[in-house]
Length: 68
Image (cartoon, rainbow, N blue to C red; front, side):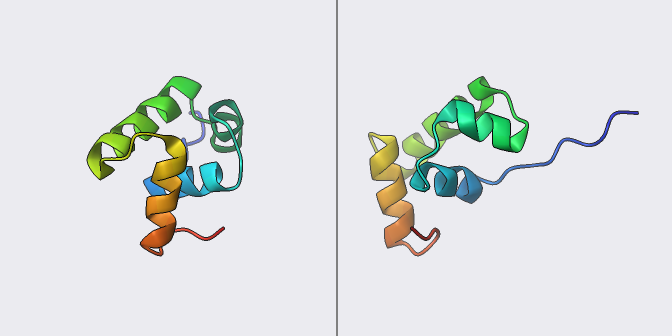
C-alpha cells in the first residue's frame, strides 16, 4: 500500500506563495501535481475576489492568516 498523500491547506499554499515559491516549487514541496496547485490558487482567488496571486497573498496577510 502506498504511503498516504499529505493534505495541503489553503493557508499553506498562500504561505508558500508569500515565501516566493512558484507553482512548480510548491508542487515539489507538497508532493501535489502542479495543476492541482494552480486550480486551488484559482479557486482561492475566486472566493476572495482577488485578481492576482500577489493580491491573494496581501489579503491573507492583512487578515493575519499568514506571515511574511
